[in-house]
Image (cartoon, rainbow, N blue to C red; front, side, top):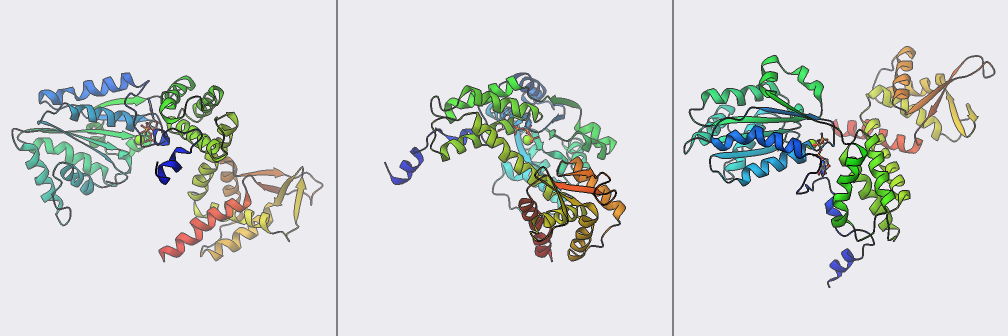
Length: 402
Ligand SMILES: Nc1ncnc2c1ncn2[C@@H]1O[C@H](COP(=O)(O)OP(=O)(O)OP(=O)(O)O)[C@@H](O)[C@H]1O
Ligand SMILES: [Mg+2]
């Protein structure tokens, strides 16, 4: 055995960790049989050379939309009928009408030169190819379709193409986890895109347990996952909106923790810790995407907390509470440093309120003892981490832009 393979073999719990990767699509999607069937029924007309209805698939994150559509598209392509062609794309990458149509062409004509065409030329090229040899049924799956900048014109173009085509058709499958985006669409594209709708419901704890269990034999060595740990991961994820991605991620991280410690089994403790790590990642996401002034407020509070010489605080049961007037001062100077005009204290109170809603700070109204009436603010997240995240997003990125 080579040195590298030996290294790979040394794991204590994993057999093949790729099985838990978000990109791995299992052959069988349990608990989605009905959705798979519905999609197949909807797309079946393509095999008889008639146009399937456009579909819109909606469901919260981690409910298996992408996995399901990819699988059904694969099945359809697997029928090997020359007259049926498919393309799947994630619109985070193909985020405009131009890029999406370009992808439709390059998917099946790889030697097609990618740049320099006007949109009209691309459009003609796509229609010509569809009309070739008796006409094709072309199914276009647009995942995370809500991020397309000019979605109205993309939907309009792909719908309208059916009038321009002498032979063959284009049909769409739109996928999104944001139902509200439909309100942004104009009425016409909304009704074209959503001729038929399929909603993916969140998984419950039992289903999540099944999804995890399905992967355990391939991903882990025999007996390397304690039953209670698996149940715990499923139960936690069920509370997190029934997100299968989160459940898989918990199990994966728990496995890594166990392996890092040279343990032979993944237990509840590792799952608990994995949850903490996942929560931290989420806090990172929340903090780094806050509006600028709220970041300044949070940063101000963190900088007070990290200032070891700063003594104007109230310590209560291990918590450090800061006067909101002092936090406001820090906020003002930080905003100025960041090139922004500080907002009034009324706005500041709004920001504090928003941060409190997100669970990042807590405010306490002090009783009479402490300097009359004052609002005290506590940071609910590690100050050092807050500072690191905000410095990264607020100051470094800005520096790079300039
Ligand atoms: N029924 C299932 N059986 C097995 N694995 C599943 C099932 N549903 C989801 N998964 C797995 O869970 C993860 C998330 O699924 P998927 O990417 O399809 O979610 P999604 O609905 O597209 O989420 P998002 O809205 O965030 O894009 C993937 O790794 C997928 O393989
Ligand atoms: Mg998806």
